[in-house]
Image (cartoon, rainbow, N blue to C red; front, side, top):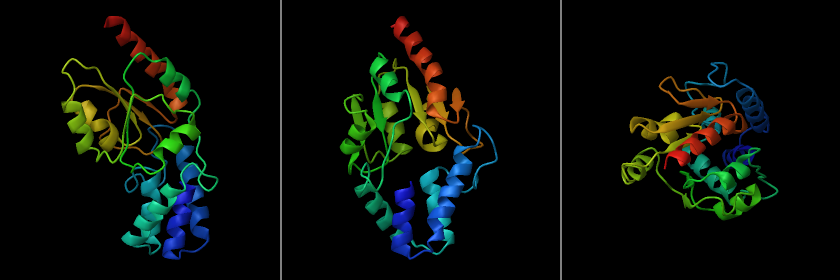
Length: 210
């Protein structure tokens, strides 16, 4: 996220303080309890990327600046300029669960394989879907499943990652500090490690009934 903020600032010629302000905003949001209203611009930003967009637009950045900044940051993903780390316990969870594991992202495929290696998640997903065009793309994927399929959708943006699953009667788990008044997840926490025990129990319970 910091790489994205730096890239947008460079493209738009924003003040050096812009990145520091984003870092401060992220610290507030990441420190908020799940479901808390005390987060940065809850009505304007739906996730950290959107927070950068909101702040950059207010500072004078244009759509082209945002697009070029995003592309530049994705090209640096999982490098020294844009280091990443997986939530604690995620790799073990994915390795242990007896279920099809699908990563669905609206991000382009640029450096996704490298990112999975850096995160220690390489080979732990049965499918990786990029440029997914969520929420509509996720809705289409769910509609294509066998009607007996039981799905647990996990994500940080209710309307993109979880609402399509919820609308079809599937289980959902919401992670992070960006609330949505329409959110009605089955599980919710500020961080993914906090959710993993409940998610593990959910998967194991359904594995026993198959």
